[in-house]
Image 1 (cartoon, rainbow, N blue to C red):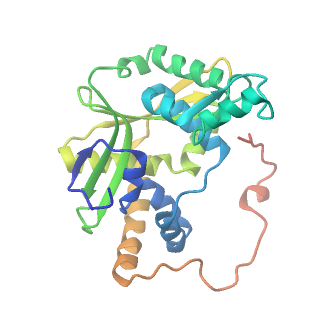
Image 2 (cartoon, rainbow, N blue to C red; image 1 turned 90 degrees about the horizontal axis):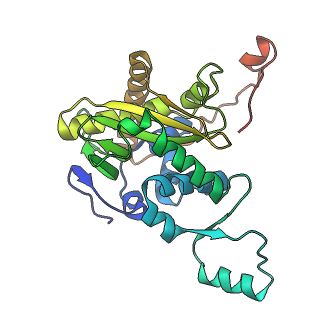
Image 3 (cartoon, helix red, strand yellow; image 1 turned 90 degrees about the vertical axis):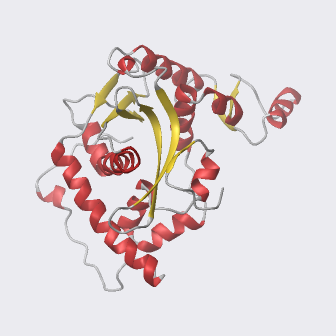
Length: 281
């Protein structure tokens, strides 16, 4: 699906969605580095990392079971690809992403996390639900600049006007601020603002955005997060600034990388204030 779609909500594969060049949250994050990084993102497939495969597998198992069966293969414990049985299994599942049956970041973890999502009392208020629309692709025209925007929603509950996005994490506890810092650093607030803008543009509705953070280890703890208006306002300011530069790049067909001047490395700001305790994910 390379043609430009009319504004609206669509069901399409990830390949069809990514084939449409438009302003997205992922693109906005790349543009923050430089316009050249945005252009590189749109001209080729994104870099694939093992952690992405785990997150994608969890996402698919939980809300897209058909795609999970088509895209992922569960490797039996103890199987060696050097054996006749292993070679046959590998050939049969060629093209699929292989995930281990047990152990850290395995199918057993994915299954337990998915079950935790389905039985969580807060999440259960809007998922699973017959009113849910899963994996909808949205396309709309930016009201200020006129260029095409896009997003792909995990869960849209039309009856309760809720947009929900699933996230995996090593720590979802609200009191230790790990996930809150991760949400800021990875631009989850700009994702929320971008998605909310898309829904309002297409439907005229102001919906609520929720993040469901699911821990990757037992006891598979879950916390549902939302964003304050101050965070959404900050995201709006960030997106507006990016959109001005993006519009200029579109008009000039110029996509520069970093500024050419020299940059002096100084003591990091967090080191000036003392020691930093960081959880590595």
